[in-house]
Amino acid sequence: MSRNRLKRMSSSRFVRKLFIVFCICIFFFVAFNYFLIPWYVNAGGIQTVPSVVGMAYDDAHRVLDSLGFEARKGDVRLDRDHPAGIVVIQNPFAGDKVKKGRRVYLTVSGGELLVAVPSIKGRTLRDARFALEKEGLRLGAIEYAASDQFPENTVIEQKVAAGAKVKRDVYVSVVVSQGSVAQKVAVPDVTGKTLAEATTIFVAAGLAVGNITYVPSADLLPNTIVDQYPRVGEMVVSGQKIDLFVVQGAEKQKEILEN
Image (cartoon, rainbow, N blue to C red; front, top):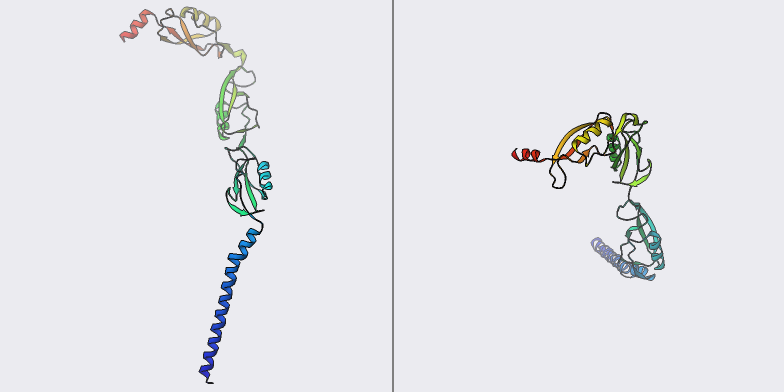
């Protein structure tokens, strides 16, 4: 045989071998993907994953176990919309069809973020408000009381104890010092009194009449006091002026109308 003919025969045998190898690869690919894998997956049975989102973790675990799934606890994340211990995410998702015995990973709520209440006792009202807002809290109702220990306008009591764990945006009420009792005078009640009577009462208590605001009234006599500020019982310094709201008389009403 000639050399060229031998080369052509060798080349032809190589192509046939290559073709046979290619066919074998195709056969195994088809068999693996369309027969072996489905057989392996279906050998244990196919099940639909139930929904366990919104359940307590222990309840979700029991439900999955009863159906032949393997429940696994995944991440714990803060969630203000779900209490701590509630399942918020599952993987695979509800409705997915998976092999029996498949692991189902559950993400559980850690509840809402809690913050520690700072100690604001002894701080000024301004500093107390800033300290609370820094932690995501709010200054609540403010009461006033005389104190020989704390200077005026400092916090002497907080209604939520320092260090307590609370949710954000909680209001913390406080009691604020009005200063020493010895230097304070309780504001007397002069509502319903005449302006002249109120003046006498204030002088006797070491106080004075401040701004007078006249208001109309069809039910009360002229010069009758209907309101006062500061309020009754508040502790104020001696000599403090008390603003009054007084029923206007006919002359005063005429003067106001003319103006």
